[in-house]
Length: 433
Image (cartoon, rainbow, N blue to C red; front, side, top):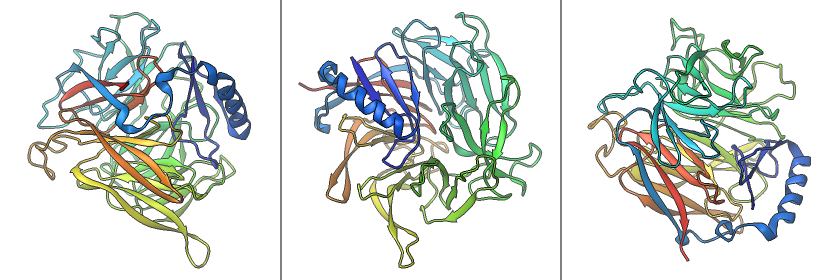
């Protein structure tokens, strides 16, 4: 059986972002550009006869999610998924612990696997998994509290041994750092604000793309995107994303105030900034042609208020890009993380989000004690009109500041892994007969 799943950002006809080819044994092949799309299209056609029925496109009302609670302690607002012990099964990491599939036994990455008081904040806002030293074992990236360092923990290759910690960056600004392949070379980079450690909100702060160096234990090299003092680069900035806004085949960097245009010359700095009205404080920002009219639009969600929006790209009278904002949902608050993914297999990107429960404690935000819901929103197109159908699949979990949508059990269906002040859990997708 074979299943093709895009690697974020979700590719469009104008995107040069590599695609990820996922097979049952979870090997990966990264291919770039138009050639990759032709190759993957051919593979898809050849494999049609072998695609599992469970992965065939279905309407949203045929989809359910089965929840498993991994932990009830608050260890992290983010989560990473990888086969950390190389037994062929995907595991889940939250903060300084990881849970081994299939029985989800907890193992410590550092110290005692530190947990935090849910009235306060964690020292783990985002988690990502990748093999950073080339030894074939997935390591763990941990973005600590905003304005503090980002670390990576070296996989010891043996369960029970300590993981060695390395500093990737001394300062991590913006609450939605993004880890993905920005320049299409098949290697992921970390996108976030940077600043001097002694003045994290000072005038020297900038947006940057951080890349690994030849020495995997060294701090990552910063490719500066913005001028100094740029929007989206303060410690608690809200709103950050990567995607091809102008359709030139290069991934740009977005904040709620606008976007930096990626130059053809990868060494050029800073990038040109284009002011754009991408709305209020938000979380993750995504770029895709949602209405199918040939230009890419923008998706964002409110971090601490109410609202999920798509910003339709249009043309002004002078031919330059203009933006029209449409509200998708406002029935629950604090959608502090969002993931774009094709949940129902119809080749259109849906999205998953939920409520970040007690984001600022029991009295700090709109409806902090309302149910910690989880939803996925099914994208539908009617001509050049985009609409989303909401599907609630839980009411006592919610999101943190980052989570994962991935096929956890190898059945060809996308599942969800989250962590926040209610603990950690996974949701396995099932199809109704």
